Image (cartoon, rainbow, N blue to C red; front, side):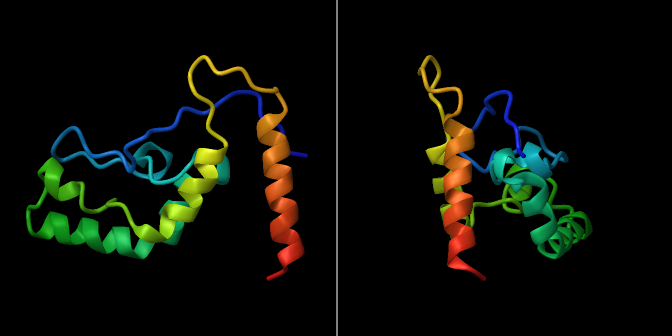
Length: 118
């Protein structure tokens, strides 16, 4: 069983753009995907080759300004379905929801995906 004990903060303008030059956030810290869906670490591993190549190129070309590094984790349209799923599980500040809301939503989505097969 999967248990969720708290809400996760999410960001409206994701992926998060670097605030500083020479610093690149990866995994959950990058805001690429929701941590609820194993998104941060999962996104890192799915895109490891692309991100590794981009970091290598940035280092070799001295493209370490925050604007240059922002291109490494740039938004990719194929993540829109994951963001839609994350948005469905978002709770606004001050919003009152059933404490079982997220777990029920996840269970329903996983049941539907399971029924669809591979």
